[in-house]
Each structure stands twice: as structure tokens, then as C-alpha cells.
Image (tube, rainbow, N blue to C red; front, top):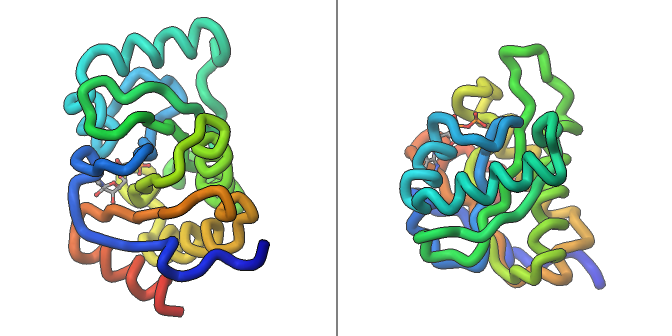
Length: 177
Ligand code: ADP
């Protein structure tokens, strides 16, 4: 099995809703009912079927919301990918400062991708926006989690899609180290 090779992990600047990989990851909140930032962008681009699926998951599986650090897949509505994998990052403003919680978002999302059969996926900078984690720390934790995951033997490509130049730079540095 061995460590994943570097070509399996890419970083680029862009809007994750435009990605045509098998799956994109949403930095959701526990309610799964939409929010601001990348969550709002994904719901707007996917259309109403995404919210309907999220409501159904709340009803059947997570009546109290998706716990921090976990992930769940839905279809992708009008998006050009096949699945959206919703994960809930730790909120630093609420005192959630344990790096394991953030690493768990990446681990859980990879596991969910493998479960549904996705072979390629894009991640945003989970918790680096409203949830107020320092972007360097997010980048380091994200790259380490993906690099060290045994699940990468079942994934052909992970692409970090970063919205602005500063976040892109942090991920480029993490990938280079
Ligand atoms: P969180 O609540 O987990 O911090 P946010 O959505 O507030 O999530 O921010 C996470 C990151 O996603 C931020 O770096 C933000 O700039 C970025 N982002 C916002 N919109 C998009 C988008 N359309 N594509 C990719 N990244 C995005």
C-alpha cells in the first residue's frame, strides 16, 4: 500500500462549485440546512434538491445535526460533480481548538468518498472562514491528514480548491514541506 504519491494531491485557486471531480466537500454547519461562505455557494449552485436531501438526512439519521468532525454524502443537484460530502469543521469562536477535530473532517470525508465510490474529490479550506481557524494551521492539518490516510489507496486525486491567494499560498507551503 505505501504512502500516497504527490500527484494524488493538488492545490489550485478557484471556486469549488465549478469542480468536475467525482465529489466536492462542503464546509457545512451542524444543521446541514445551509449557511454562508462555501456552504451558501454550494447550495446556490446545486439548487433546491441539495437542501431537500439534507433535510431528509436530518430526519432519518442526524435529528440533532451532524456532529463536528463527521461527514455525510448527498447527491449534487445541478453541480457538475456527482456527490457533495458535507463535513462540519470545528468552530474556534466556540472554543473548538483541538486539531484532531479538524483532521477528523478530512478523514471522515475521505471515508465517505470511498463509501460512495468517488475516486476524485475537492476540499475547501474547512474552518478557515467563519469558523476562524488560522489558515496556516488548516493547511498543515489538511495536507497531513490526506497524506497519511490509508484511504488514499482508493482515491486517485484530492484537490484543495482555495478561494483566495492567501489561502492558496498557505496550502502550497504545506504541500511543499
Ligand atoms: P467555515 O465555516 O468552515 O470556516 P467558510 O465557508 O466560512 O467555512 O470558509 C471556508 C473557506 O472556504 C474560506 O477560506 C473561504 O474563503 C472559502 N470559500 C468561500 N467560498 C468558496 C468557494 N465558492 N469555493 C472555494 N472556497 C470557498
